[in-house]
Amino acid sequence: MSDEKFRACLAETLKWEGGWSNHPKDPGGATMKGVIQRVYDAWRERNGQPRRSVRLIEDHEVEAIYRENYWNIVRGDELPHGLDLAVFDFGVNSGPARAVRYLQKVLKVKQDGLMGPVTLKAANDADPLETVKALMAERRKFLNQIPYRQYFIKGWMRRCDGIEQACIVMCGMPVKEAPVAPIADADAQSETQAKADHEPKEGPSSATVAAGGAAAGAGGAMVIPSPPEPVVQTIDALSSWQTIIGTGSAIVAFCRDQWVAIVITIGVIVGLTLWSRRRA
Image 1 (spheres, rainbow, N blue to C red):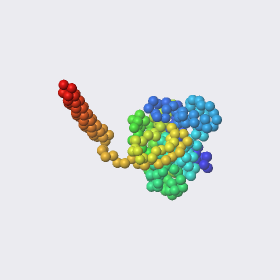
Image 2 (cartoon, helix red, strand yellow):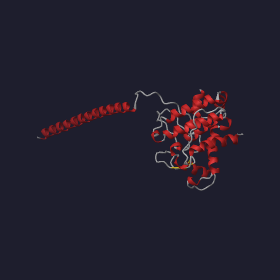
Image 3 (cartoon, rainbow, N blue to C red):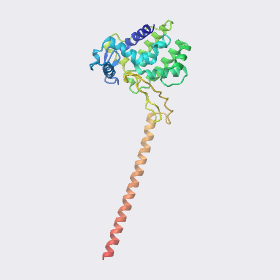
Image 4 (cartoon, rainbow, N blue to C red):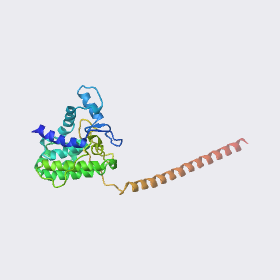
């Protein structure tokens, strides 16, 4: 059963991961069937194989990487039908630790990014359809705050729509909307397979994510707490205040330095005058 679940979810994800992509704005870089070059290099090295272009990746390698780096990390075998795809595809595109953390947010359990027994129990006790819809809503919110979203947001949203439809069907429910399909040309799908694994920078006290996403390799995880509410409402406002404060500090420093120079100069002149009078 587990192999059947994995292959069914992988088939849906690969519809959106397409073929070859090397979009200049994609932080993942060169990608083939959703596997980026550095992940492929790491996997080949772990298996005693020499490095080579990810464009040459074979189907059995694609399957092994997806299983090891994503499916096993989110414990897809133990998730309900439909929710397994929602978490798995989120993990492929944005990192398994992040996918688990957002699932935990929806389930209202500790957000540590680790798929443990508490999270699994909550996932299996909840209504899978409602959980899928809530998780996909959180995923869309996350995608809409990524710094480079303007290049890929349409593709990401289309992918979310298609994946959500597939999840609903896996939950045993009909889909009322017209089917959402990826671009027919697999090599033109860079907008749907671009890696979405960036969040706004947080304060120094925040924890970091370890190896969570296609760019991370093995897929370990740590929690990222939600960033605190900003003191000012916009980046522009923040920049303006920083500019004012910085300018004021510079003026004070300049005046202070000038007065120090004047005092030193006066002291030197007075000293030289007294010294000259004594000699005379």
